[in-house]
Image (cartoon, rainbow, N blue to C red):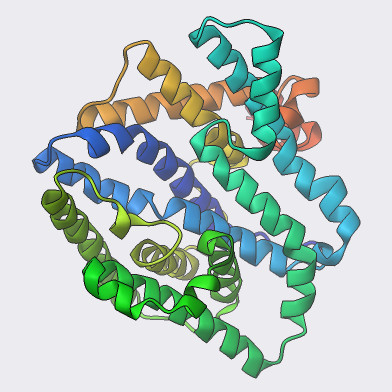
Length: 366
């Protein structure tokens, strides 16, 4: 039996894909720029962009831990892991070719060393997400069997433990380092498996399963307050430190995860219909490909002289990267031998959802 489509996940994926591109484009002007009004505006937007990765983990947690297929190891090995690892290999090779051209080294040795290094270390920084998600996928059959066999009391216990761990990280961020070290509880620190992202993954399962409806006014107020803490904390910590400090924007725990929780619930409660005036399905289905490709394009554009230095140039470069990634991936997904490797989706699905054949059929029908 097919699970009902989760409509609000479409919009969360769209938000996350745009956010993560903006985040990486803005990283240089935020990290190296002068702290002024424009820097503050970029910090405001990146504060919300930092929720993209937690939201992706939360959605994966809900989808995997509510699917009976998750307990089937053959499904994991034959379908789910290849959907992650095939694009990782493909884009590792593409990045390697780019590095060979950039460093003027076309030797086979350099190529092999770069590709092999990608087995243990991400060849581009943002690839870490795929490594971590793959590790969680490997654990998913055990997580599914464990979590589906828990009693209601045990579920509450696990949920409370997760909240306590995240609350502890929030407290540690706010406190001065001299005081924070005194209140560091190693037990809670050790429970932050896989850098805390496994907890975010589990949190998504619980958030998706919650039936209680929360006040939109309260959730919106929490978004404003939490975002305000992140923005002000980042500003004052960066000003005091003489340069950008991102501890308040930590996407593995603390305030950014709490902000992601509030956004998750707001989307869940207010987006229930699948009908849309604008068809965003092709973009959504290519969102994983956009994630894995965008930073390479960002580096190439910077190398060619298109470096974002302010708010408007960051917005312009973000839109340009999204547009180019979309066109490239849409084209690659139209080429059957490359579709799965470039996007992680099957050619048949691409023809039904996102590639140029899909677009042609839609126009023909219209």
